[in-house]
Length: 360
Image (tube, rainbow, N blue to C red; front, side, top):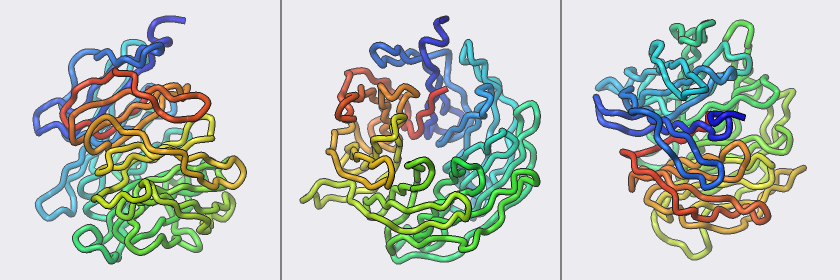
């Protein structure tokens, strides 16, 4: 095994200022979790979320930009990735079909990229060319509506896009209208069609943000940003129907301060879910029942910084990396294999407003 295989690549996207580096590459020491930088960062314009192509040789980043009227202006950038050196070579960029894109994913097979645009409440569907570059969008979908929370829910705000493990449906968290929208994925034509029914409602004011699939793809756990809860839904892979099952707070009893949830991650063993709390500045840990997806709170661990925007597990599940937008750090935790609780390693790096961490 060579050094590049032993030390996994780690990519960090940040809210770097215009003209400044916002995409950084590291290698992680698998024994200590320490992060060693590779070269200089790339100036790509607010690289706030990242995704890998299934071939492992192409990387995509949203550029969280907007026109003055917040209707367009967002971009998605494509890069060729050398998996041995970790080098990134810019390929091209295309419109995200909206404003302030904040999340993206690549469909199985690698021929389609989906992007969520927060401020415009839109989804962009972009074909991926054979060389990994992006073609102009084939489809743009817009959500309509509002929720009960002033300022945050005056309109639709698409916050994430996720493809189910069977590759049949796309689930879209819309924070502004308190819905998880469901689309059928026509992979051959590269199009999305509304499912029947086309959505499931969350609690008013919940603000669904991100989700993970558990229990073999038969359950979905949604992190609700605005009311600091996680919701469990039953999911029918054939029909795409979601059914509410459970809702649990991400905060400890008695906490009364301001808080919003951000990232939700499933451990590779499927037994633990991690959610970041911004305000309480903690990682909430839940046990996951393998068959039903039911959650049991296990505890809270201080995140090691302010405003933990993202948290990502390495492929082995041994380490959890937490990106703090508020204190400009990525902090490394070791995950206890028995309890699932993160334990500080003392390792960290300093970056300008890190908001996304991705393993290569």
